[in-house]
Image 1: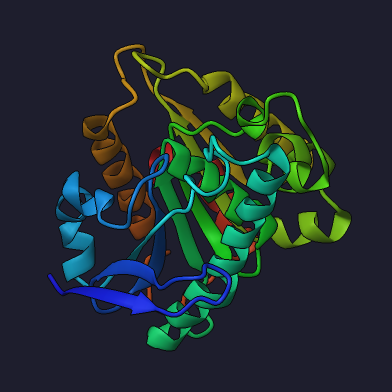
Image 2 (image 1 turned 120 degrees about the vertical axis):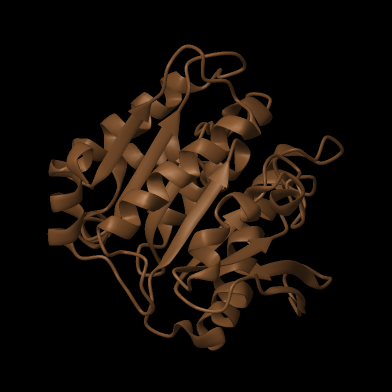
Length: 268
């Protein structure tokens, strides 16, 4: 499959943003790494190879980006105020630097799939909910969704703005209207190291209460918080998206598509 290492300039980041791009066409999928991870982790754990048929057939194009978790939420040397502010900087990096790069790569007008595992799922939910005009699909696997555990009891507006479990309970009317066209998958196992299933349930509940299309899929008590299971899960959901016609160049979700998918999930 086509594989390219790319570097793009980012004033906000303060140094170049590195990424690896897999594929040549199809629906763009932005992949967030796990906690304090790097742009090459998704490849190192064999995920592109696992979904290589979707990539090689031109159904999806992957953009695996860096995180700055070690500068933001998990920066033990910085104050909570700085951590939250730097997390918002990361949003600017993605929206102002990475997304235009994706659009210029032949994806003008397309909705982007947000995807990540573990803390990458946190980023997935956050970007999906805050930027519905950009991300029309989300696949969040084994995520935590409440960032409070990194803040040592501190809270301010910046922390609230970066905390999906909290702000999802009071989304604006305009934001809800935009999100009702889109579709978020929240998936979690219930086995070893899956400590945040309760947060997944609560986030899905918040979204369902305002009719935002969300599918909560809890896998069994043998399903661990680990890459072998995430490989199975990403294939499972991409196959359903493919059969539903979502994995096409320039595709953007509609409310009718989202609702039909939810109503017929097990038959797709």
